[in-house]
Each structure stands twice: as C-alpha cells, then as structure tokens.
Image 1 (spheres, rainbow, N blue to C red):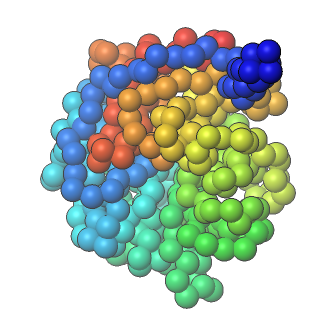
Image 2: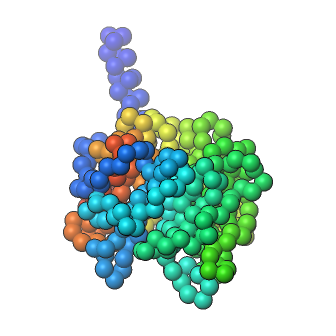
Length: 336
C-alpha cells in the first residue's frame, strides 16, 4: 500500500511539474544545415521580402579563429558571404530598415568575444560597416561580450543590447545606439542595467520589437524582462520561466496569431517551453525536438517557400548544425 501511495505521489509531482501540457512526440527537423568543425550558437534570420527563397540563416562558429556562418534555406553554407577569422564570435542578431545616415538598411550585429567588440555587417552582402570592430564595456579590462540583441528606437536608430561573460547584479547588460558617421557605425553609450542571480551566466538576449521589451536568460534562475526604451526606466518588469530541468537558454519571440516567448530548456530534454505575455507570462505549452542541447533559436513568420510558407523556427544543435522546423509542425502546441 505504501508503495502504491508513493507511486501516485511521484506521478502527481511529475504531472504538476510538466504543467499538464500535451506530451509531444519528438518533432524532427525538415532541414539540417551542413555541419561545421566547432561549437556553434545563436541563429538569426534575414528575410528577403522581394525574393523569400533567397532569405538567409546566420549563426556563429565559436572559436578563437571562429566565423559568422551564412546558410541558405536548404541548409547549405554560403562561403562567399560567411565571415571568417573572427575571434570567438558568440551571438548574432539582425534588424531591418534602420538608419544609416540618410538611408535605411538591413544589418547584422555580432559579438566578437575575445576582442571585446561588436561587429556590424550589411545585409544581404555582409560588407563590413564597423571599421574592424567597436569596443563595448570600455571601463572593463576583459568583459568578453556574449549575448546581443537589436531594437529599433522611435527615431529609427538601431540599439544594441549587449551582455557579457561575468558581472555584478544591476550592471550586467549595456545598451548602445548605432550611429553612422564617416562611412562606418559608431556606438553611443546609453545605459547599463540588468539583475543577475550569480548562479551561472547571461548569454541569450532577445527583444520583442513590437512590444518594446528586452528578455534575457539568467541561467539557472529564469528569464528577466526590461523595457527596451531607456526613457521607460531601468527596473525589471518581471521574471519568469523558473524551475527548468536544464538551463534557461535560447529565447525566441513569436508574434504570430498571438504574442509568445519561447525558451529552450537546454540540457537533456530538448524541450522548448512556451510562455504567454498576455497571460502574465504563464507557461501555456511546450514541444520537443530532435536537435540536441539547444542554446539558441529564432522564428520568422515569412512567408517562405514550401514547406516554410507559414513560418520557420531555427534551433541550434550540439551536433554542430542548425535545424529548421516549419510553423505548421509546432503550431498546435501554441494553442493548448
């Protein structure tokens, strides 16, 4: 009898922990990119409105002689556009139509960790726009920038939100305006903010450019949210995504039928958890995929050519490749 009661309690505990969400079968990627030689991270998606089939997936190969790798929608590496000999690039992000002098353009920003800089390239041609790199966290000797996300302010300027390898609570993230001057971008420092639990590190950063909210993963603790506009204050709005099996890692913003924040539960489970800002960031679902220990993901609604006509979800995998999933494969788990 005691064993039966214990079994019931264990099952009840597991049910509560999983939130009684639909247990998914593993979703298998439609496309797996060509593999590279070393650790990869953090995909970004550049969407080509005039020819969606020519859209790009961009990620990093993290090493002292690393690279920013450009892929097509078939997972093939575009060696002509990829940027090599980058000193441990960590994370990347893309933003469209931001001010570059008197014109607007699409750009990619990446952190170059071992040089304590961010790098800026034009899209889709991947031409250098930074004069060789722009120093961040200038008051620190070796901050090692890691996470980066981009936000467009009210004047149309791109803002880079940059995290670092280590730091003290309240000063973990800095925000810079990207200003174009004399044929290259420069950084205008705006603010430093960001609570940190001290448990592990902060790497994944994402911005909801529709609702103007910054999210970052405080690994081992949860996800923290801040206003993207410095004029709205430096205080933490809230934190959520607690009690994961592994680390809280990659963050994707999905503005499809509703607004969602998707966070990878990294180690062992290959699970992405779904949170609803409209329901006070309650977890509303989850799904499991075949990529391994993902610590970076991105979504774009498209439309793209089939089978991604309704959107594409790209996730980094520890097998040195990125995996592409269609919105049609995962959408049912957003309606639980």
